[in-house]
Image (tube, rainbow, N blue to C red; front, top):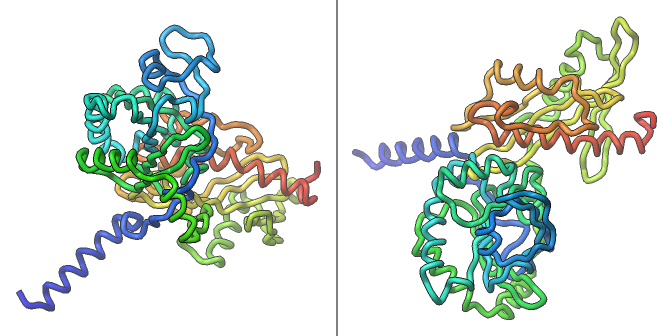
Length: 385
């Protein structure tokens, strides 16, 4: 085989990988928090079994009624240990599923080692997942350490929501601080490698880690919104069609700036019942999975906050395949007529598109957050109070 043919095959191969897994190759390696940073003060709320409570060493600082599983509220400072491994995972993420046996072996290695047991604890946080999904995942994957639901992505985004899952932080505890000593984005395949990182984290000098982070002058990474795969002109055309989806004729369309570099399109449409005002927002969210695409869709609602249209611009399912028309229609039926001012109550068993549960969860969560746009439009006088 000639050199040119070899080079051509290599280029084609990598081109195929980029096409199928663009985020895996272009994923940013920076996160909101990394070595030398303080772990943010977060209150975790979760249903824990007596064994999980005993493992973490937390007290009954908040508990509701229940027999086996009780509801606890706690922070990292309530966990009795020296080093805490915080793993962010989603139960539908393929990489997270593949990594589960690896973390199980790490957990077992720590528990069997007299020099590590008690000094190191593992805590899993599941962005976009509820207690029921976590319970099923723990049973299927034989996960022994506690997993905490984060259905609204609040914890995930506070710590590093643009990184994707799996995402791991090692946090050293002192009397006054919880300092991150190590972070990793993506799948870990070697338990031995990970356990060595645990030893390194325990032996690391915290003063040196913090000093090095400050010397580098690290700039805090802000949450970056992914850009949609179309031009401003194409977005405007899609929004016009969205506003006319009920057989109305659009006569006016303007772009209005909101806070945090956000914007909304306001349109006036004429129909048999007279003039109506609609508001359209292009919504983009980074994927929760490390190899999946970001999602982009247009949400259109009226001056009462009622959803009148949902238009996917780019939403994919397993294998980064785009949704088909039947999946789009099915989701539209679930959303149109609902109010952005009220919780949608996402139920993955009923509301999710097959093989696109993570994307579905992000869509419902984004729409529930859309009430902030409505409130700001009211404050600016575009919607009557």
